[in-house]
Structure formats: C-alpha cells, structure tokens
Amino acid sequence: MKNQLFLLALAFLMLYLSTSLYGNAESGIKVRYEERKPFKIMGLDIMSSSDSENYAQLFTDFVARMSEIENRVSDDIYGLSFPGKDFDAKTMEGSNYLVGMAVSDATQIPKGMILRETPGGNFAIFEHKGLAQTLGETYGYIFGKWIFSSGMKPTGYEMFEVYGKDYAPDNPDSIIEIWVPVFKYK
Image (cartoon, rainbow, N blue to C red; front, side, top):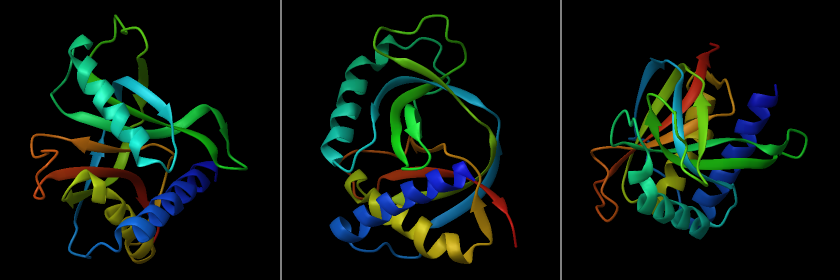
C-alpha cells in the first residue's frame, strides 16, 4: 500500500509538471514489458522537488564526476526515484532522486556518492522521444491515461529513467526510457 501511495504521489507531481508546464503528451508513446533482476546504481542524489533546475544541476554535477565510478556495467546513466531516509508515507514527502550508473561491484564508493540496490521485477518501459525538459509530458501520460486503461498497477516506490545510447541532450529526437514497476491486475 505504501508503495502505491508513493507512486501515486510521484505521479501527481509528474502530472502537475506535465500539465502546468508542458501540456499533454501524445498517446503514441511506445511501451514494452520486461522482467529485470535487481541491480546497483552508484551516483549522486538529492531530495526530490518540483524545481527542474535542481535536477539539471544534479545531472551536471554527476557528469563532471562519473569518471570516478569503477566497475560500470555500461555507459547508460540512470535517474532513480526512491524513498529517502526521511520519507514519510503519510505525507509522501522525503523522496530522493539519484543520478548514477549501474555497477557490477562497489568496492569503492567515491566521496559524496551513494550506492543504491534497485529491486528487480516486472516493468512497463516507456519510450520518451524528445528533450528531457518535456519528460513531464510522458509521465503525465503514464500516470494519467495509460495507468487507468492498461490493466497494470505500480508495484513499488522505485522507478527509473535510462539515458542510453539514443539520448542526446539537445536533440528533439532523443530517447529516454522510463521504467515503471508493474503487475497485471485485469
């Protein structure tokens, strides 16, 4: 229940950002389903907020330091939303956002970085095509139209974005994947 409340609060935040700042996403967003094993992400984190400049600065800070991360699994960069140490399920405050890279082994964690084990499971993966600044549109679609018509329910707090080989910051054809943990209920 707490997992669903967290995702619902996060969804409303993303929906608010998408409708108040960016408008509405088209329903032509590609979605696929995959099972994924647990994995580790190492990087920098902040307490979540509605200020997009905080996230942009976090990405900038991380990119400047990502060479410090050893044992990287790939060059993909992850953006992970998760309940922070001060998370309160009643108020839904205190979630964190981690920008990092998947690692195979974490023998050394660079100063100021954290290591987070991300649970595995079944995921709905959405392909956001466009600039990162319009990511809120896709979240609006996911937790608006899609979640109510898909027959799926979110299963946990932790969802993440993947900035992979098809991501280019200034390219309107850039691809960002959004991984949402789900289970089928219909």
